[in-house]
Image 1 (cartoon, rainbow, N blue to C red):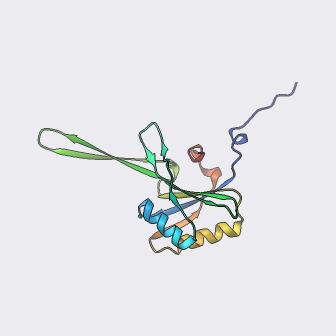
Image 2: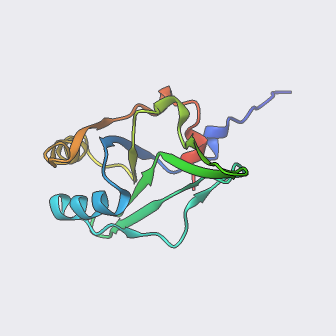
Image 3: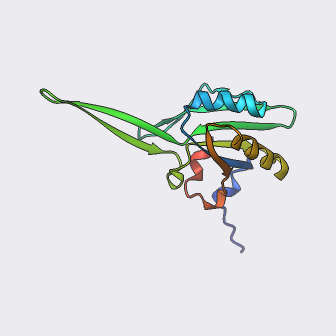
Length: 153
């Protein structure tokens, strides 16, 4: 009798490309500049990626119906401020949580669901790099990510 095993990747049918972006911009400003420079139409999603640790990562989405691609702009970090008030001193502590902890230097990810051509990906990365407020952008190898399950939504 032959034994079959299933891998978690067998259930993940969506193929996607991931682009990392380094910038100090806030999410809505980056979405605006991407719309302006890439001719996209990112809009704030009605949901965010929420996890048990009370971290909430903002999501913007754009659907390209011509090429049947779904684009997502996802924040990689969440900062929680806690105020501890003692008798006379108010102390504030910040806790930073990352969606993809092994890529802590990446501020935002663009997830392109579908199978764009290498030329399209190269052109997109190049156009993102042309934005003055963006330090750099590049494609992220999915095989190098241990926490890529957080990008399945």
